[in-house]
Image: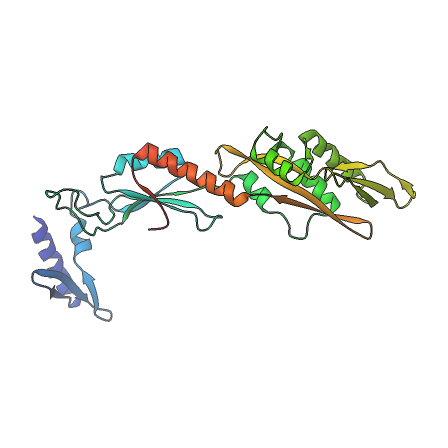
Length: 303
């Protein structure tokens, strides 16, 4: 039985069972559609989903595929792209950046006089890549506004010490420190600082600041002993090497190190610098990788 026969048999059976009416809706000069008016409030139903069940293959590609790596996103786009396919990079929300490929977008203007296949399309065949933020990026972005207590600061430094690096000669961190006349800490110096702070967690502090280098010296006094502890050198900044996206290349970022004293107690403040510029560089790199891999135009924004 052909498709038309199947449809007629289906309508006949439903009419017998529930008083289904077949209606034809017409609009324009030659556009029409057949719908079923079924019981339960006389809902209007299209015949097309029923008829589509008998097709050997769908009339066109539809659906959204989620990819979990940028490389797989590029490979998948290459499998399904057409000459009109486009890609969008939406970085308006830095917490949830996304890349979307549309394989059947609205077509551009005719490229040649012979090119008549222009105009709107369904835009419902897509691929999506949600950029996974790295654990390192998330950790350094989540600095408490009111700073760290001494013990929490020591724990954070010990946990994230692997992110700390040496400033590259002539790099962004070195220039940042030079402009502000700050002394940069090495990973070893920060680790020593964190261990010293953990030991003196219950101690009051006094400070001395070298105005030339920006380096501060904290001396801790044990309350129950009333004796001066060993001074700890506090640098003004240090460098971290972290990726923005998981499995991405690392970027070197300067981090300001400050503290405030209140009644002999210390609150510590870490402030990563130029994060917006670093995020933009990471997005631009992914955009260029996708352009190179797929040969498609990549726009900033959302479809």
